[in-house]
Amino acid sequence: MSQQLFDQILTEIENYQTIIVHRHQRPDPDALGSQGGLVEILKASFSEKHILKAGGSVTGLEFLSQMDSVKPTDYQNALVIVTDTANSPRISGDEYALGAKLIKIDHHPNDDPYGDIVYVNTKASSCSEIIVDFYNAHQAKLTMTDEAARLLYAGIVGDTGRFLYPGTTVHTLQVAAELMHYHFSAPELNNQLNTMSHSVALLSGYVLQNIEIDELGVGRVILSQEILKDFGVEDSETAAVVSLPGSVEGVLLWCIFVEQPEGYFRCRLRSKGPVINEIAKRHHGGGHPLASGANAKDLAEVAEITNELEEAAKDWLN
Ligand code: AMP
Image 1: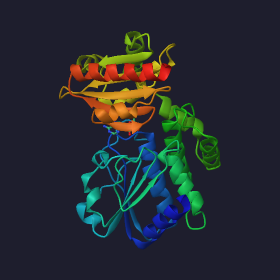
Image 2 (image 1 turned 180 degrees about the vertical axis):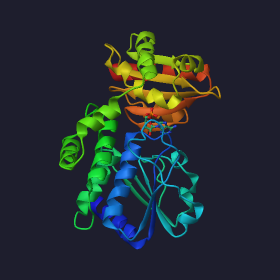
Image 3 (image 1 turned 180 degrees about the horizontal axis):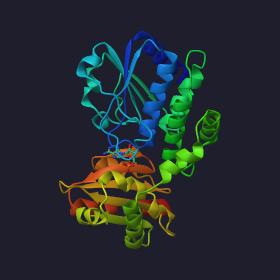
Image 4 (image 1 turned 90 degrees about the vertical axis):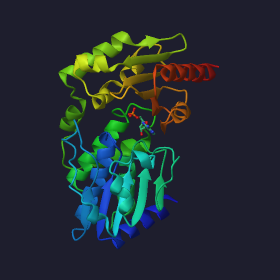
């Protein structure tokens, strides 16, 4: 099945002269790694083709990838490939729909199977791992480069929390080992991925000091606009503190509620066991069983989500 879909994807790539690769909004290392890694492989393999990276601005991860300037006219007769994006509303760059054909490549649950060809493997640790699988399925026609390997390795490190999360498999480690044969500095890349600004370091202290943990192991922290302003931290930078509550004794699942300037709360949900993406889906979100995102319109909905997390904890503990 995988091989058949990979064959179809390669055939489409061969058929089109222009290929534009998108990823999700607020890109993380896997979004940029899978997008950039695929683009590097395609550029090295098909030098005559016009291959572009599209999407909104990249803040804090500029060392990974920069977007190309893509015009609406570029989409005429173009193949569009979207990586690491579960739902079409989360695709960064609405112009993606202007292409002649659309391919989705992802590792999130396939709740929104947009695209003419859909390749989804929820067992993959990251979308970057899937791009390496695609390369391996067609090594005779595709070329891996040092830069592609660097980007794909970054994506895997990012989405596995440095090979820590349960999505990390034997295959993930094999793929990462394969990438390390290429010429890039993994320690330097890991340092870049790990480095936090002084303000995020201070916010980390706030999160650890203010986490509320109940007797079921549900942890929560609310980051108001006031707190974000006090610490001088942008919403996008809260990614760096999402995993922290998981290292506190007794925390089974947790949510960091980040208030947005418009007044609603972006909810970043994580779990060490209970499935949480069904909760996220009930609150305008989605994601993986153990790592999801949702939106709460006000503090009342924050309380509702907290209650649902408690129910999930109870079910799991029973
Ligand atoms: P985050 O907390 O933003 O790192 O998101 C964790 C996971 O949930 C990622 O895999 C996202 O793809 C997914 N996710 C976050 N927000 C949403 C959303 N609004 N809708 C669907 N999936 C989401």
